[in-house]
Length: 451
Image 1 (cartoon, rainbow, N blue to C red):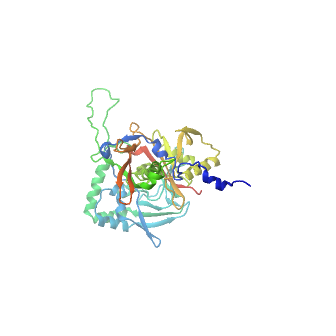
Image 2 (tube, rainbow, N blue to C red):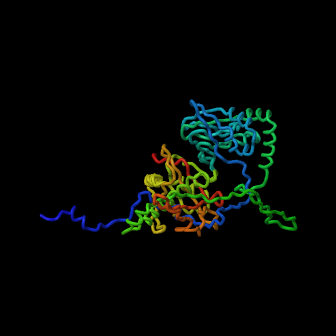
Image 3 (cartoon, rainbow, N blue to C red):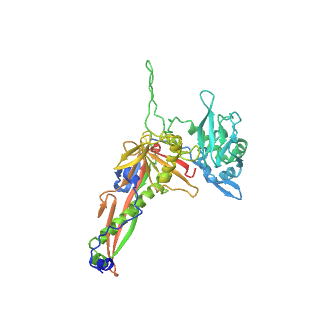
């Protein structure tokens, strides 16, 4: 009876959208970090001298139900941080004894002789001390790779001043004082190292481990004032610029004939730049050299008390530093935290940030970031940070003013046309991220999403 719509469309001009991309995310990390110009492609972080005598996590291997301490990993202990004798480390690692504990069992008990070093190979345990009024109080939550009792190997023979109780199934590796003394007697290198360690431990330092600045105050009369100087690290860390690159190829026939109503080259570049910025944020979180997950100080890493992210865990995370400004977490982790708040009848506030409404905790924005990894077992992390150079926080590094720059720190350079009439463009993003002082960045680890 009339012309059909299918035929009519042959004479009609369609209305089109620009190419869409599902992979674009808010990229909150790139938005909230203050960006600092890194001339010469390198940024050096100068700090006061810190006595780095070890505070790391120990790694293990497992085969047929037997766990072994990785010998070089014993250098993560303060006691053995700079010890080089591989044979002695191997002898020490082979003498650790494996023990297993069920939830609720005591790993060590307060008042018993402190006669061994204990490494947490698997599971979670509570470190319990005595409160001011005689009641028990949880001092810390110990996780895999952490340890306690190191002073029992070199100090005076005392009693445990705390109790460690298993929260989950726990496997520990322990080394007795007697065994350690026997190995020490057989190694002159270890004896010399222990003497040097004890002398280093006696040097004055503040609660952050920095070399003390000698001062006098409140004195009356004429006293000899102390003299001092502020010592610096001799080998400060330097952050070199990382780069994410790709070569964009466009056939000249496409650019010549199919450029209306949208410029094909512009749209190809727009989507390529979006992909580079997504990869940039991923690297700034997960890269082993510069990523926030791997560059957080081990003293700024804490474990959840019970598994899921509770308000108690979040409070402990933000109190580890002054002026916590932002908390990044996977969207699923934020949802898990919301469930814990709902179960307690707590309803976090919201605030507007950069034109978006975000959830907050203690007025600190909780920003979703899907680049934070979630393990196969449903574990992830929360990242808390203070930002800015003046705040001694976390900063982003870029190099603005590049040739053929289209965005700060990102340029597009024409590479020519090959013999197949294909144009090539080199798209490069240069960036890095630096932590000014250790307490600028903190991680809540082992967050369980399924509980």
